[in-house]
Length: 219
Image (cartoon, rainbow, N blue to C red; front, side):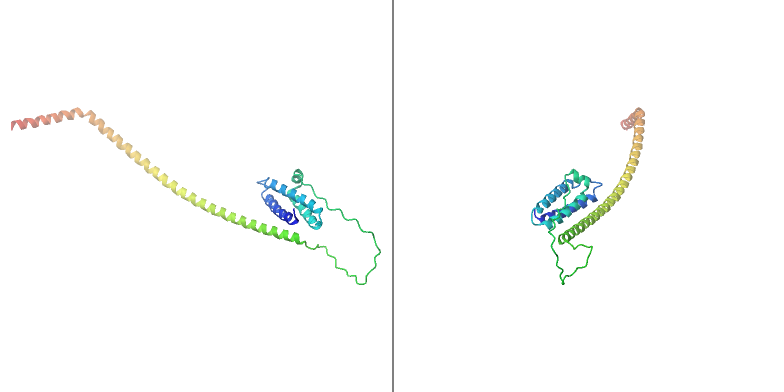
């Protein structure tokens, strides 16, 4: 694998590690297998690059691998078989030769700050862009959750209104049932009274009919 591909793989692995650190409390195994596989690829790629002439890229990737490994955790790295990559052996010093001072020797001022590595600057810029994109995604997710919360509150208000209407309907139905029960009892009393007085009414009707017939025949 080339140095550029290894750098891209290290950048994506860093994003996964940052997301895993953010959500480790609720998802302890998040991206665990993918991160372990990527770190194995980076380690193997660094070892292969050391055998070629691109030693500077190999050393830069080795340092990046060690940082990713420390973020992954020493215990998890040992369990996954992700061992450290020892730094390269320093070359043997050349034999000392007699130095002839030059009158035009110039000295540069000493500084503790190392010169920036273009590859590391590019990686940092990519990481910054990815973190900005993740922040924008989280903001969008937060606004979506806010909208869902507002909708749920509206639904709750509508349910309360419908519950009040149903309670009023139940009250009206109870009143109607009570009135129907009272009317049923009155009809039962009327029916019982008619049943008890039925013979008397029949006799009275027969007498009335007899009187009408007598009057008719006499005339």
